[in-house]
Image (cartoon, rainbow, N blue to C red; front, side):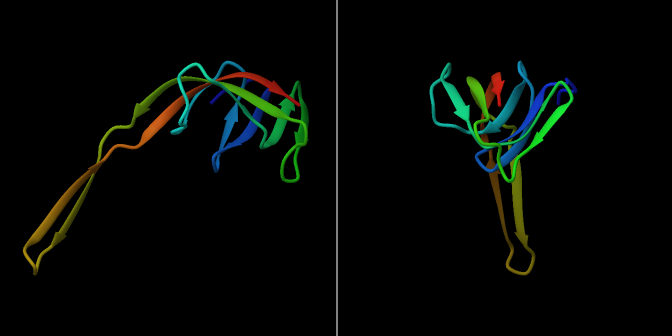
Length: 108
């Protein structure tokens, strides 16, 4: 996370992220092409040069603009189920998809 003086807390598909201009974050998978610019209007808090704005619950007129940099998948998580009296065992693997976003502009 960044410790810059200008930052915002934004809600992106149910998760909150602290972002500043130029940051890259991993968010839940977004179905859009690489290079697409997306505006996010659910801004919960903005700090610009020490002036803090807190929304109730969001700040009206505030917007965070991000660009899609890449898509990917997380490392595999193994789920192992074992029932000792039934002599059964199952192993499943799961890789969660994600989207890397680059924050281009914060206004509000």
